[in-house]
Length: 332
Ligand SMILES: [Zn+2]
Image (cartoon, rainbow, N blue to C red; front, side, top):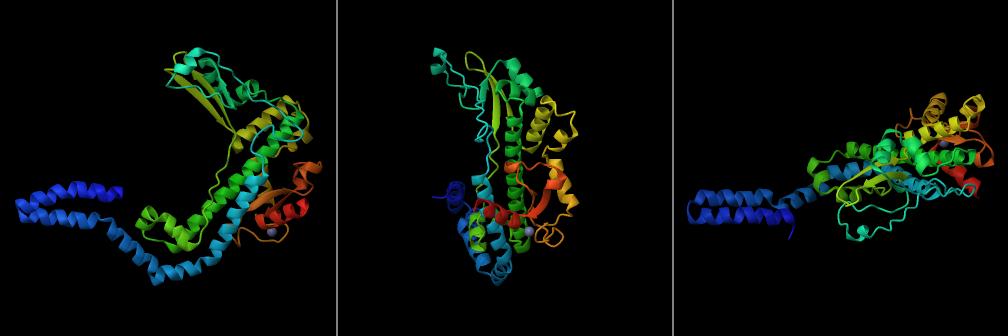
Protein backbone atom coordinates (compact mmCIF):
# COMPACT_ATOMS: atom_id res chain seq x y z
CA UNK A 1 0.00 0.00 0.00
CA UNK A 2 1.48 3.41 -0.90
CA UNK A 3 2.51 5.45 2.10
CA UNK A 4 0.27 8.52 1.58
CA UNK A 5 -2.79 6.29 1.18
CA UNK A 6 -1.90 4.38 4.32
CA UNK A 7 -1.43 7.57 6.33
CA UNK A 8 -4.67 8.99 4.96
CA UNK A 9 -6.58 5.86 6.00
CA UNK A 10 -4.86 5.82 9.36
CA UNK A 11 -5.97 9.35 10.11
CA UNK A 12 -9.33 9.29 8.39
CA UNK A 13 -10.71 5.94 9.53
CA UNK A 14 -11.13 6.81 13.26
CA UNK A 15 -12.63 10.17 12.26
CA UNK A 16 -15.14 8.46 10.00
CA UNK A 17 -15.98 5.81 12.58
CA UNK A 18 -16.42 8.40 15.28
CA UNK A 19 -18.45 10.55 12.95
CA UNK A 20 -20.79 7.81 11.82
CA UNK A 21 -21.49 6.70 15.39
CA UNK A 22 -22.08 10.18 16.89
CA UNK A 23 -22.68 13.07 14.56
CA UNK A 24 -23.17 12.68 10.86
CA UNK A 25 -21.26 15.79 9.76
CA UNK A 26 -17.92 14.57 11.19
CA UNK A 27 -18.30 11.47 9.04
CA UNK A 28 -18.91 13.59 5.98
CA UNK A 29 -15.81 15.62 6.81
CA UNK A 30 -13.80 12.40 7.13
CA UNK A 31 -15.02 11.12 3.80
CA UNK A 32 -14.17 14.43 2.21
CA UNK A 33 -10.65 14.19 3.64
CA UNK A 34 -10.21 10.73 2.17
CA UNK A 35 -11.38 11.88 -1.25
CA UNK A 36 -9.20 15.00 -1.34
CA UNK A 37 -6.04 13.32 -0.16
CA UNK A 38 -6.59 10.21 -2.23
CA UNK A 39 -3.79 9.39 -4.65
CA UNK A 40 -6.38 8.21 -7.16
CA UNK A 41 -7.39 11.85 -7.60
CA UNK A 42 -3.78 12.73 -8.41
CA UNK A 43 -3.55 9.89 -10.91
CA UNK A 44 -6.75 11.05 -12.62
CA UNK A 45 -5.48 14.63 -12.79
CA UNK A 46 -2.10 13.44 -14.08
CA UNK A 47 -3.68 11.27 -16.80
CA UNK A 48 -5.96 14.11 -17.84
CA UNK A 49 -2.96 16.42 -18.19
CA UNK A 50 -0.79 13.94 -20.12
CA UNK A 51 -3.68 13.16 -22.49
CA UNK A 52 -4.57 16.81 -23.04
CA UNK A 53 -4.26 18.32 -26.49
CA UNK A 54 -2.11 21.09 -25.08
CA UNK A 55 0.48 18.69 -23.68
CA UNK A 56 0.53 16.72 -26.94
CA UNK A 57 1.01 19.93 -28.93
CA UNK A 58 3.84 21.20 -26.68
CA UNK A 59 5.44 17.79 -26.78
CA UNK A 60 5.68 17.85 -30.55
CA UNK A 61 6.84 21.48 -30.51
CA UNK A 62 9.76 20.63 -28.23
CA UNK A 63 10.71 17.47 -30.15
CA UNK A 64 13.68 19.06 -31.93
CA UNK A 65 14.98 20.61 -28.69
CA UNK A 66 14.64 17.23 -27.00
CA UNK A 67 16.61 15.47 -29.76
CA UNK A 68 19.45 17.98 -29.40
CA UNK A 69 19.32 17.66 -25.59
CA UNK A 70 19.67 13.89 -25.84
CA UNK A 71 22.63 14.26 -28.17
CA UNK A 72 24.38 16.52 -25.66
CA UNK A 73 23.63 13.89 -22.97
CA UNK A 74 25.45 11.33 -25.13
CA UNK A 75 28.28 13.79 -25.55
CA UNK A 76 28.51 14.14 -21.75
CA UNK A 77 28.85 10.34 -21.54
CA UNK A 78 31.67 10.47 -24.12
CA UNK A 79 33.54 13.16 -22.19
CA UNK A 80 33.11 11.13 -19.01
CA UNK A 81 34.45 7.91 -20.54
CA UNK A 82 37.33 9.48 -22.47
CA UNK A 83 38.46 11.96 -19.85
CA UNK A 84 40.68 11.41 -16.86
CA UNK A 85 39.40 12.50 -13.50
CA UNK A 86 42.19 11.32 -11.29
CA UNK A 87 45.68 12.65 -10.80
CA UNK A 88 48.51 10.29 -11.59
CA UNK A 89 46.64 8.22 -14.16
CA UNK A 90 48.52 9.47 -17.21
CA UNK A 91 50.81 7.06 -19.03
CA UNK A 92 53.68 9.53 -18.68
CA UNK A 93 53.47 10.14 -14.96
CA UNK A 94 52.56 7.36 -12.63
CA UNK A 95 52.59 9.36 -9.44
CA UNK A 96 51.47 7.02 -6.79
CA UNK A 97 50.71 9.83 -4.41
CA UNK A 98 48.10 8.02 -2.43
CA UNK A 99 48.89 7.91 1.20
CA UNK A 100 48.68 4.39 2.44
CA UNK A 101 47.92 3.96 6.07
CA UNK A 102 47.97 0.74 7.99
CA UNK A 103 46.10 0.64 11.21
CA UNK A 104 47.41 -2.19 13.34
CA UNK A 105 45.52 -1.14 16.40
CA UNK A 106 43.33 -3.83 17.91
CA UNK A 107 40.97 -1.07 18.99
CA UNK A 108 39.87 -0.65 15.40
CA UNK A 109 37.90 -3.89 15.49
CA UNK A 110 35.79 -2.71 18.36
CA UNK A 111 35.00 0.76 17.10
CA UNK A 112 31.49 1.26 16.02
CA UNK A 113 31.37 5.02 15.69
CA UNK A 114 33.48 7.36 13.58
CA UNK A 115 35.40 4.48 12.14
CA UNK A 116 38.25 5.82 10.08
CA UNK A 117 38.17 5.10 6.36
CA UNK A 118 41.37 3.59 5.12
CA UNK A 119 40.65 4.24 1.48
CA UNK A 120 42.76 5.91 -1.20
CA UNK A 121 42.88 9.71 -0.93
CA UNK A 122 42.17 9.57 2.77
CA UNK A 123 44.93 10.61 5.09
CA UNK A 124 44.47 9.87 8.73
CA UNK A 125 46.18 12.59 10.63
CA UNK A 126 46.37 14.45 13.90
CA UNK A 127 43.68 16.98 14.69
CA UNK A 128 46.21 19.76 14.11
CA UNK A 129 47.01 18.54 10.59
CA UNK A 130 43.29 18.27 9.76
CA UNK A 131 42.78 21.87 10.92
CA UNK A 132 45.82 23.11 9.02
CA UNK A 133 44.70 21.29 5.89
CA UNK A 134 41.38 23.10 5.95
CA UNK A 135 43.23 26.43 6.24
CA UNK A 136 45.84 25.69 3.55
CA UNK A 137 44.38 22.90 1.39
CA UNK A 138 46.79 23.10 -1.55
CA UNK A 139 49.91 23.10 0.62
CA UNK A 140 48.77 20.19 2.77
CA UNK A 141 47.43 18.18 -0.13
CA UNK A 142 50.75 18.43 -1.93
CA UNK A 143 52.67 17.55 1.19
CA UNK A 144 50.64 14.62 2.47
CA UNK A 145 49.59 13.12 -0.85
CA UNK A 146 53.05 13.60 -2.37
CA UNK A 147 52.04 15.79 -5.29
CA UNK A 148 55.42 16.75 -6.68
CA UNK A 149 56.23 20.19 -8.03
CA UNK A 150 57.55 19.12 -11.40
CA UNK A 151 56.50 19.67 -14.99
CA UNK A 152 55.10 16.17 -15.38
CA UNK A 153 52.75 16.68 -12.45
CA UNK A 154 51.76 20.09 -13.77
CA UNK A 155 50.88 18.55 -17.15
CA UNK A 156 48.87 15.90 -15.29
CA UNK A 157 46.99 18.51 -13.23
CA UNK A 158 46.30 20.55 -16.37
CA UNK A 159 44.93 17.50 -18.15
CA UNK A 160 42.57 16.66 -15.29
CA UNK A 161 41.57 20.35 -15.04
CA UNK A 162 40.73 20.40 -18.74
CA UNK A 163 38.53 17.30 -18.50
CA UNK A 164 36.86 18.44 -15.27
CA UNK A 165 35.96 21.86 -16.67
CA UNK A 166 34.79 20.36 -19.97
CA UNK A 167 32.50 17.97 -18.13
CA UNK A 168 31.36 20.71 -15.70
CA UNK A 169 30.31 22.91 -18.60
CA UNK A 170 28.64 20.11 -20.53
CA UNK A 171 26.70 18.93 -17.45
CA UNK A 172 25.50 22.45 -16.66
CA UNK A 173 24.60 22.92 -20.34
CA UNK A 174 22.37 19.83 -20.12
CA UNK A 175 20.74 21.24 -16.99
CA UNK A 176 20.02 24.56 -18.72
CA UNK A 177 18.50 22.67 -21.65
CA UNK A 178 16.25 20.73 -19.26
CA UNK A 179 15.17 23.98 -17.63
CA UNK A 180 14.38 25.35 -21.08
CA UNK A 181 12.25 22.32 -21.95
CA UNK A 182 10.34 22.68 -18.66
CA UNK A 183 9.81 26.38 -19.39
CA UNK A 184 8.56 25.64 -22.90
CA UNK A 185 6.04 23.01 -21.74
CA UNK A 186 5.31 24.66 -18.39
CA UNK A 187 3.51 21.72 -16.75
CA UNK A 188 1.40 22.18 -13.59
CA UNK A 189 3.53 22.09 -10.45
CA UNK A 190 2.14 18.76 -9.23
CA UNK A 191 3.34 17.02 -12.39
CA UNK A 192 7.00 17.78 -11.70
CA UNK A 193 6.54 17.20 -7.99
CA UNK A 194 4.85 13.80 -8.24
CA UNK A 195 5.31 12.50 -11.76
CA UNK A 196 8.66 13.89 -12.93
CA UNK A 197 9.95 10.56 -14.27
CA UNK A 198 6.79 10.00 -16.29
CA UNK A 199 6.91 13.59 -17.58
CA UNK A 200 10.50 13.27 -18.85
CA UNK A 201 9.79 9.87 -20.36
CA UNK A 202 6.73 11.13 -22.26
CA UNK A 203 8.61 14.20 -23.50
CA UNK A 204 11.38 11.85 -24.63
CA UNK A 205 14.18 13.38 -22.57
CA UNK A 206 17.00 11.05 -21.54
CA UNK A 207 18.13 12.46 -18.23
CA UNK A 208 21.87 12.30 -17.77
CA UNK A 209 22.93 10.19 -14.79
CA UNK A 210 26.37 11.78 -14.95
CA UNK A 211 27.77 14.22 -12.43
CA UNK A 212 31.35 15.45 -12.35
CA UNK A 213 33.50 12.83 -10.56
CA UNK A 214 35.71 15.29 -8.75
CA UNK A 215 38.84 13.74 -7.29
CA UNK A 216 38.61 14.18 -3.53
CA UNK A 217 41.30 14.29 -0.90
CA UNK A 218 40.37 13.88 2.72
CA UNK A 219 42.26 14.59 5.89
CA UNK A 220 40.69 12.75 8.74
CA UNK A 221 41.17 12.64 12.44
CA UNK A 222 39.55 10.06 14.65
CA UNK A 223 40.21 9.99 18.36
CA UNK A 224 41.72 6.85 19.86
CA UNK A 225 38.40 5.68 21.26
CA UNK A 226 36.65 6.45 18.00
CA UNK A 227 34.21 8.74 19.76
CA UNK A 228 35.14 11.98 18.07
CA UNK A 229 36.35 12.86 14.66
CA UNK A 230 36.94 15.73 12.29
CA UNK A 231 37.77 15.83 8.65
CA UNK A 232 38.76 18.28 5.95
CA UNK A 233 37.73 17.50 2.38
CA UNK A 234 39.47 18.98 -0.62
CA UNK A 235 37.48 18.64 -3.82
CA UNK A 236 39.46 19.09 -7.03
CA UNK A 237 36.99 21.30 -8.87
CA UNK A 238 38.00 23.94 -11.40
CA UNK A 239 38.99 26.68 -8.91
CA UNK A 240 41.03 24.20 -6.83
CA UNK A 241 42.74 22.72 -9.88
CA UNK A 242 43.54 26.21 -11.18
CA UNK A 243 45.00 27.12 -7.79
CA UNK A 244 47.01 23.89 -7.73
CA UNK A 245 48.37 24.61 -11.23
CA UNK A 246 49.32 28.09 -10.13
CA UNK A 247 51.16 26.83 -7.05
CA UNK A 248 52.98 24.19 -9.10
CA UNK A 249 54.07 26.78 -11.66
CA UNK A 250 55.40 29.02 -8.93
CA UNK A 251 57.21 26.14 -7.31
CA UNK A 252 58.74 25.08 -10.60
CA UNK A 253 59.97 28.67 -10.79
CA UNK A 254 58.39 29.34 -14.09
CA UNK A 255 56.90 32.35 -12.42
CA UNK A 256 59.75 34.48 -13.68
CA UNK A 257 59.20 33.37 -17.27
CA UNK A 258 56.33 35.02 -19.09
CA UNK A 259 56.08 32.04 -21.45
CA UNK A 260 55.67 29.68 -18.52
CA UNK A 261 52.94 31.82 -16.99
CA UNK A 262 51.05 32.06 -20.27
CA UNK A 263 51.19 28.32 -20.81
CA UNK A 264 48.75 27.74 -17.94
CA UNK A 265 45.26 26.77 -18.95
CA UNK A 266 42.80 28.24 -16.47
CA UNK A 267 39.11 28.94 -16.25
CA UNK A 268 39.77 32.62 -16.84
CA UNK A 269 41.84 31.91 -19.98
CA UNK A 270 39.02 29.74 -21.34
CA UNK A 271 36.54 32.55 -20.70
CA UNK A 272 38.93 35.02 -22.34
CA UNK A 273 39.25 32.88 -25.48
CA UNK A 274 35.47 32.54 -25.81
CA UNK A 275 35.05 36.30 -25.46
CA UNK A 276 37.82 36.93 -28.00
CA UNK A 277 36.04 34.60 -30.45
CA UNK A 278 32.71 36.38 -29.81
CA UNK A 279 31.16 33.20 -28.35
CA UNK A 280 31.05 31.69 -31.82
CA UNK A 281 32.47 28.48 -33.28
CA UNK A 282 35.60 29.07 -35.36
CA UNK A 283 34.74 26.19 -37.68
CA UNK A 284 31.02 26.45 -38.47
CA UNK A 285 30.28 29.95 -37.20
CA UNK A 286 27.32 29.05 -34.97
CA UNK A 287 27.13 31.42 -32.00
CA UNK A 288 25.47 31.85 -28.63
CA UNK A 289 23.63 34.80 -30.19
CA UNK A 290 21.92 32.36 -32.57
CA UNK A 291 21.66 29.40 -30.18
CA UNK A 292 21.34 30.54 -26.57
CA UNK A 293 22.06 27.07 -25.16
CA UNK A 294 25.03 26.40 -27.40
CA UNK A 295 27.79 24.45 -25.68
CA UNK A 296 31.12 26.04 -26.59
CA UNK A 297 34.51 24.53 -25.82
CA UNK A 298 38.06 25.81 -26.03
CA UNK A 299 40.22 23.68 -28.31
CA UNK A 300 43.98 23.42 -28.73
CA UNK A 301 44.55 23.89 -32.49
CA UNK A 302 47.81 21.97 -32.18
CA UNK A 303 47.04 19.33 -29.53
CA UNK A 304 48.79 19.36 -26.16
CA UNK A 305 49.74 15.70 -26.72
CA UNK A 306 51.78 16.85 -29.74
CA UNK A 307 53.45 19.70 -27.92
CA UNK A 308 50.81 22.39 -28.43
CA UNK A 309 50.80 25.13 -25.81
CA UNK A 310 47.94 26.76 -23.94
CA UNK A 311 48.68 30.14 -25.51
CA UNK A 312 46.00 32.32 -27.13
CA UNK A 313 47.46 31.77 -30.63
CA UNK A 314 47.00 28.02 -30.22
CA UNK A 315 43.49 28.20 -28.73
CA UNK A 316 40.16 28.52 -30.49
CA UNK A 317 36.49 28.34 -29.65
CA UNK A 318 34.61 25.41 -31.14
CA UNK A 319 31.00 24.35 -30.71
CA UNK A 320 30.57 20.90 -29.15
CA UNK A 321 29.53 19.41 -32.49
CA UNK A 322 32.68 20.58 -34.31
CA UNK A 323 34.92 19.68 -31.37
CA UNK A 324 33.31 16.25 -31.20
CA UNK A 325 33.91 15.54 -34.90
CA UNK A 326 37.48 16.94 -34.66
CA UNK A 327 38.13 14.52 -31.77
CA UNK A 328 36.61 11.62 -33.75
CA UNK A 329 38.85 12.41 -36.73
CA UNK A 330 41.93 12.63 -34.53
CA UNK A 331 41.20 9.16 -33.12
CA UNK A 332 40.54 7.64 -36.56
ZN1 LIG B 1 30.92 24.43 -34.92
